[in-house]
Image (cartoon, rainbow, N blue to C red; front, top):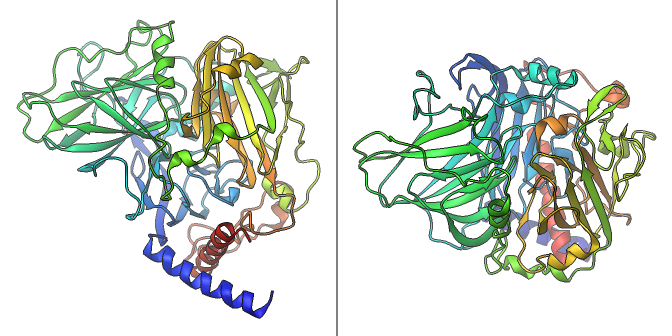
Length: 595
């Protein structure tokens, strides 16, 4: 490096540092104590996972370019990983919090996540990704705000409301896990929670007394941004607020074309933002409802979440029947058309000033195609398993990304089939070999009888098509190549397909999975491994100094000063934060200057 170039980089880094600080690129720290508490969300005491003794956990609130530092103390009796669903760890899958990239945080240990929320805005959530723990809670909202200099495509709301909805079982998550291991289905959930609370007693026959329900207090005439997340196990939910319109504005980091809905289907793992104006009279409170979709209502009559929207000048309690959901058990016409109506707002700026639509995804040549087919569960080696293309994924004891870092062989194979194979199903650690800067088309074919959602870590993909039956090459003629929404989680209807396009520009090992927790637990996932073939260190951050080591690398793990009782967190020192921030600034500079 020449002295003049070194001086120029130094000046640029200094300016970039100043710019990041002034633009909200500061370090924001959270301390998470993850533990069991006893709660009664459906009126029956049970063990749930709390964060800082709260269920659900606290909302993480950041601004574009902030560096998140989240120190997690694992007070559970088993390993723990927290996954930041939809939050893109640019250049660092090390912080993703799934078993393909991270060793679980052992019981009584703590570990510090450090990542920058770069070039991203929107509504997301976090949850525990291992051991079926999500069924016990441990989740919370994750907000990334625009920098003040970037305009939002709607008037500034008068307030921000986070609503976490999801199906719920009164059995312990370890009992649910045991049922799955024994080849049994979970059965119908016991209820639906809204912000960790059970239903308001709208019906004395269906809802017993003594259940605490969610109450959201609002001011008349005000407009609120309502961020709704389906954090449940496997049930698609229809969300609605009695007598109020839902103006859709954003989904998982992308601003949408603004449209009003009276009710909205939110599938497992999905997040949406709505503007809701409190324009009704205050003769009474109003129902907030989350009810199961694509199920037999007579069998699921107890599985409805009900909260209360309370105006400050309300004159009485909500009463009467709940607002109705769409009446279609087996006909998916309404729901699929609603999904197709969600479109990208091409004129809105995202995390940067340039419009979202400046990325013309429809004109990019596809370099690789994968058709991923799911079918009903199968028996493999005497165990009930779920598959993609006939492969039931097995997590190795040494995470894939660690195996690459330490050049270990035989941990996984880059042999995931591009199409469903005709042979018998098998269990394997089979991974997709993605091409850096390639453009991948993935067709998700659901040959099962239940609704599914799919998620990819580290990326937002473009949802370009949905259709009934089997996907064929001719199905591409129906693709939306102009304003398909960019998001990280998409639904696939039973007996139908969904097509997505992904620009593979984020180096790392990234999880591609079903969000249906029971199917995920039984093997319906894989990883996409994306490596820059050029010899450069600008496309991925180095392994963090606090990386946990397990499997074949366990002998390298240092035990000292890593328990919760120690004075400092693992790798959570001030120096590591400074180094992390400087590395992120350098990589941002390299990206902008194309060094």
